[in-house]
Length: 273
Image 1 (cartoon, helix red, strand yellow):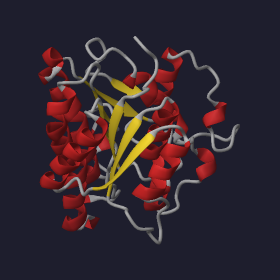
Image 2 (tube, rainbow, N blue to C red; image 1 turned 120 degrees about the vertical axis):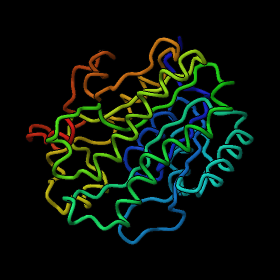
Image 3 (cartoon, rainbow, N blue to C red; image 1 turned 180 degrees about the vertical axis):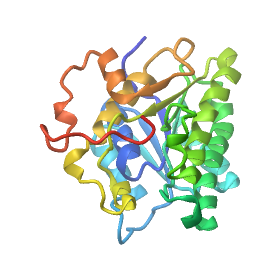
């Protein structure tokens, strides 16, 4: 089994910045094709990156890129984007469900608009993208779906402070639970990946400045972990809820200091772990 993603086509949601872009760049270094499915096609006043800047970065890293403006809440747009990616690159090998909406608040403080956004992007968006990718994944040599979602844990402590968000993220994880078994006979791997620590991305701003980036790891740790998962034989590696540092241990990586924003600083554990 090759350890490379060379010539593989990845369809990554939310790949214009953060962890999604880091996964894309790691694949690009192998010579992969990346369909960047995200909403930001013009510079956002508060967020870095667009689908076009991501495409430039991916091609500079050695990959081929296709920027696609897609709102994954729109199933027709998702279907059209999948077709465009498959036509452009000759198929789709891997789907990374990375796009996610977050609003950490107790029940009385969650506007229904925010509730609907989280559930339509996280749970529904993941389901729609997985559904629409199936015709191409079934034709791929080593097809994978990777959801960036946490291991399922029914301890109420993970629900009580932000039940709306937890339900939406766990919806992504339940897609892994169900689809890994549903698609097992088709040879399509469906796995989850989640960070041990908070990752320094633009999403930190959504936490209201409570988290110092110096207490975080860089998105590259998730990219390297995702790369290891996506190069496994799909018929043998499915239904797992992987944690980034555990994956890297399997891959033989022992020095995790290089992933720290500031080596030596205490690292904040991520939610759900």
